Length: 250
Image 1 (cartoon, rainbow, N blue to C red):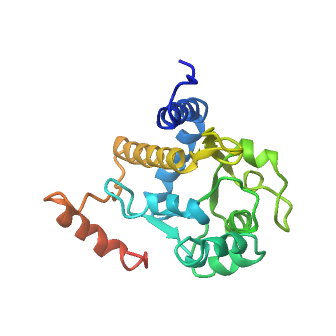
Image 2 (image 1 turned 135 degrees about the vertical axis):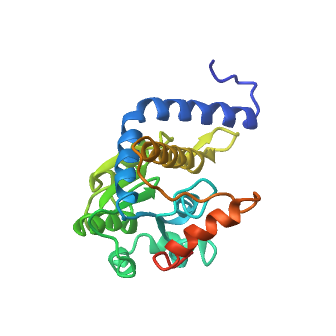
């Protein structure tokens, strides 16, 4: 079914998002499986999934942390200055600052056996690129969740002169448009970004497959329940007792 010129922006966004999701899960299926298998090995052997993003991409780090049905062995790298609630425009400027990622990583024990997922739609700025590079130096397995089409359309904006997709061990492509926004609503530029919705779906699929693989191979894995179902608090309390000493944001 093709897009109809008579579609409203709501209908067109739904249509476009579904097309991207279908294409991503078709074309990225093998890589999603690889990440899930690697993640299963990671969290069932006492290591952690670290996840990081700047600007709106930090939402994807929160998406995997302390969620109903989500893995317990997750450490989000959340830096207020790189998020939006302190200074949105300031976070854009800071994302381009060389050396900031290395200083930020000093607070974390990320290393061999761990996985880091770095989320950046453009994959061109200093902090996400340097974060991936520094994590690989420490021996972590690094996954880039990025927009390959956008990233390849622009030059790197960092001292390494590399894009995120060039410094990761494995790349997941969110299948988005150049500039992320996908809908023509009558302006000179598009609206309706897709990277958050698609990225969240990819990450949740990876997490679900990771748990499935652990169950199938009879490996113990810790997963949060919803705290808003009657049995949730009891399940989560056991997990929190185990992980609070290890994950400061819990």
